[in-house]
Length: 200
Image (cartoon, rainbow, N blue to C red; front, side):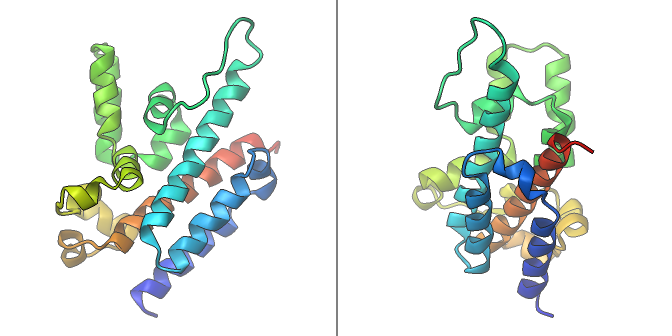
């Protein structure tokens, strides 16, 4: 089996583990998920990254509404972006365990525990790989500022253990490599999230 086939199979396996009724509570959630997976299979990495990021953004926004709607006097500001939502839920285990790499989790928690100024926390969030990748590809900055994509992957040893990315690929990742890791994180997040909202 080729590396591409192996990755498609892994994406399909992750996708099959998601509890659909949990996702249908989020408007168009299932459509976003299906499109992200289809984009990956059709070798459309930029679309895959953007759509899977949109699914996470929509899920976090839905979760925010559910959490805050019952509170009197609190209004929901539409249009909160992924970075802002990420900052609000940075202590949420589902988020940390699904969308952050191990080297990022400790850094964010440490900065919050030290009580640093809010702008420093915000800067830290904007540097989280998941958010950074979303911003790069959603806004096309990677086309304006050519750069190696290695910094968009987790550390070499973790990338190998978690995603099967060998050293050669790690040093020269393609857009497909970035999309594969990004979508894997998205699917892991959605699976954990839907598991948490479906009564046992």
